[in-house]
Image 1 (cartoon, rainbow, N blue to C red):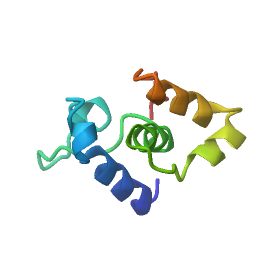
Image 2: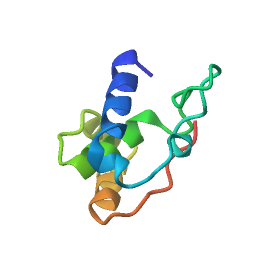
Image 3: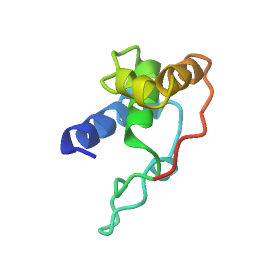
Length: 92
């Protein structure tokens, strides 16, 4: 995963609308070795980016690639987000 995607994920996650969902960071990330909230990802970062971006009404940077590579997976995750459903993410 690129540093750019990792930074985008943290920025999306820290948005007040996402914080209002009360999802703890450990749902998506392992704790960092130094005790911080953002260690390695538990879930596929591209799937998480699609999910969080859709909730915020932003354009996803990863959806088209996921759709192409995984037969519509990005569209499926975006539909889950629009229905306020937490999808079963691919584990890393």
